Length: 173
Image (cartoon, rainbow, N blue to C red):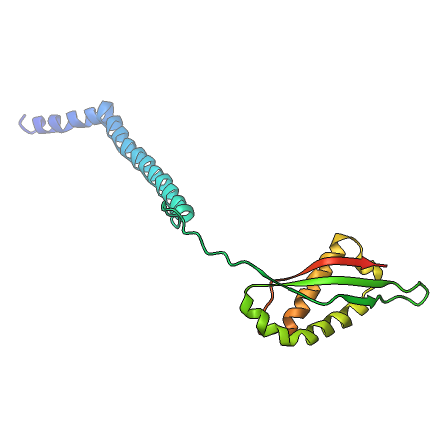
């Protein structure tokens, strides 16, 4: 009988395990696993939020920004340009009169590009004489003209650089 008691004691935990202990053990194992997953997802969300904050707002400081010193632009008037526009030979001759101003970043550059003005005027004359009246139609045509003249001036005064070509007056007649 002594041998039966240990078997019975062994049998009782098995019965308990089969009846109520086994589901409790399974529930106890699932509950920490769910909590670990929830905690991991929560940490990922918080980490992603902090990462986004650091990425977008890390460079900004709460101090007052220092105001950069703004240099006033310097403008250089060029002589008026009067050219006849290119045509197919059947139309009447049309003329283009342009008053141009160069915008220069600083006053020191004016002294550097002033000796190069004959080269700039030559670039203007040769380009403008090849234009057709239809090339100047609308604001898009004038924008293209302004961009091309800026590119040609910068090529003429290289290694110096102007900011923009501005039109004071444009007449097509």
